[in-house]
Structure formats: structure tokens, C-alpha cells
Length: 159
Image (tube, rainbow, N blue to C red; front, side, top):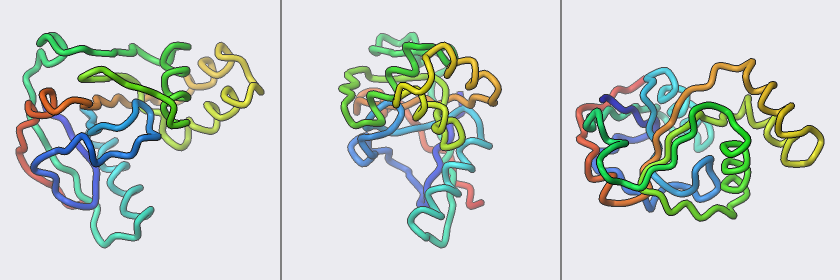
């Protein structure tokens, strides 16, 4: 399976310790199966740190990576469990002890809805219904060195 990572530099050797803590699934190395999503991440990071480049690194991992004996947390869509997991992690209060976490991306467009839920303005059910109106891209984050070691670097694409 091909995975993509958006950044401002080529990442040949992913480091799970370099990521930010207050992200959807906690500190880790984030990838997606969608090139379009990785390109958006690269552009966002480029603009955030005012870099000259936006780069997508491409990796190959075994197709059955989620069934290889790693501890996996998997969310199949926007659910209350996913919403609570993302809110806790984005507050920096999560303690993701999984090797791999897979689920929807809570991008900045969706985060307005998540903030309303977090502040108690809307219920979880209302937030999930609102989130269903958006295209939800996926993300697969690596939280252990053992899992990240399966990422085989293929190439980088400057966008």
C-alpha cells in the first residue's frame, strides 16, 4: 500500500518523536493513502512556517499492516469515539499507546465543528451529522518505532 506524508522537507527516515503532540491522534508520524490530502498538508505546513517548499514523501508498506500484530486503533468514519479521541488529543491530554491509529482527518475546515462540540454548543450527534457533509480523508499515524520501521521510502514529490 502506498502512503503519503506532506511536509516542507523530504523525509526518508520517519521519526515518530518529531511530530507535534496536540494533533488528531497525538504525537506520531502521520500519513494518508490520498496524495491530494498529503499535498494539502505540505502546503499548510509551507504556509505556516513560511518555507520555500512543499514536499510529499511517498512510502510503501505491507497491504496487511493493520493485521500484522501491532496494537491498532481504527475509526471507521466520524463517530463519537473518534470525536472524543480527537478532542482529547488536540487538547494535548491524550495518551495514545497504540502502534498505529487510522481514521478520518479532522482538518481545519472540520475543526470549527469539533470546537463547537468541545465547547458544549452542539451535541456529539449534531457534530457527527455536520461532519458527514464534508469529504473525510483518512490518515494513518505511526506511534511506535517498530511500526514506523515498515515505512519504505520510495520518492519525494515537490509540489
